[in-house]
Length: 192
Picture 1 (cartoon, rainbow, N blue to C red):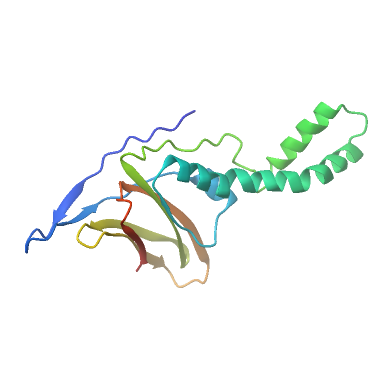
Picture 2 (tube, helix red, strand yellow):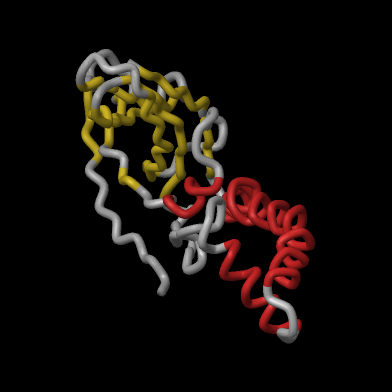
């Protein structure tokens, strides 16, 4: 199944006075990168992906390469354990059992049918940022984007509202599409 992103973006002109170009605001479009985030959740993330080549690189770095490294590191031991516990089967059956074993636990669980979203990098830039907050429930996260063409500064602002006073850490990677950011523009991630 191929995921297509049908995208509608609304761009608003703010402050057109004093001869400067207006600051452009738009609503970021969420992108489901859940499969990749199952493998490399947590830690820090501040990604600006402007091209298909960069997208392939980050997808490999955060999804396929870690899975392959885990497979390479654990395959032989898992295979020998399965052979020891199930003598007399064929190598193909052992391979299938290793596969089933890997895909029933993390980091593989939930990734078997993953397909990366298709993104039009001629029109959009993909931004990824980690959001962390405490609270009794997952926080409410409002995401805003603006581009100031006068300073070539693109800003993705996360307003994070914690719910309750519990000390439970909630982590989430947010992936959004914004209108294509010019190559020379600086991208700033701001958390409020």
